[in-house]
Length: 308
Image 1: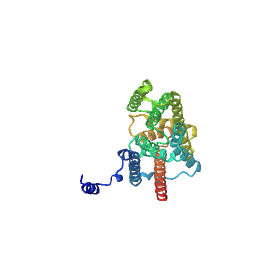
Image 2: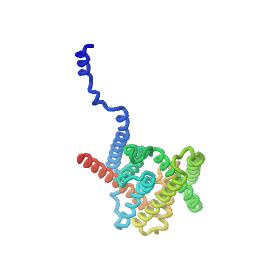
Image 3: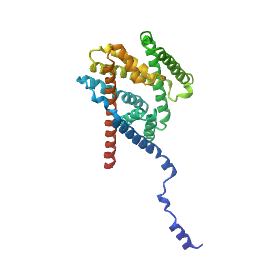
Image 4: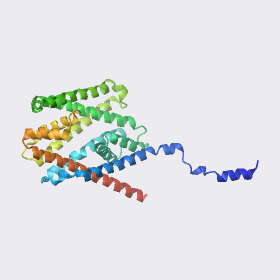
């Protein structure tokens, strides 16, 4: 054999040691997906910020510090309850709170459940923490929806005798149609639970209870924030309004949910304009908190990367 020809051909061939295994390239998808969703979140927040997203801050701001304390606890509630769940399931570190905040922000400013895709990608990057995260993320997401539906149905049963008379005939039809959809979308998961869910039954009931506690805690905190913004209305009445807001937000056929709730609540308390301004303020503060967190997480990631 002509050894010089073989050496020449090997010398002209690409360096095989520099090629990456296909498996290693495939494992990069969680990092790429997480990065792409983060960029989309930044873009969506910037669009809302400059598209009159902070118009609510032009109104008169509440002077009571308890309003801002209640709002802060209300804002931090969803990721905190999620952390409690995944702390038990995966024993995630406190740093996982950042991923859970991004999950929440992604769901609110991008397409619904895009946050679950981000959190799944985040978990896949940490295979030493959990080997197969899909089943747990799926179960927690489904149970969140079921808990929301269950609490909403309970609120409807409590509020129907008092609130149905405030609605027009068309709005009542929206409510009944929405109830039918809520029941229809929840029943299959209950009937085929053994095929749908991956976690043990006891764990599923515990997660369901945590989600119910999250929803009730959030409704209570937003009612307290409203009370300190408009103290002339009693906190007990605001609790009823928070239940009504939860009910309106969960009903799928009701259009312009925030407007519908502000209209109904304004008729009840007789301060429609003040309530509309309060809703705009809450939305603006939420957007501002989203922007601050994403900016902080991005700055921390850049600093950490530069130190490595």
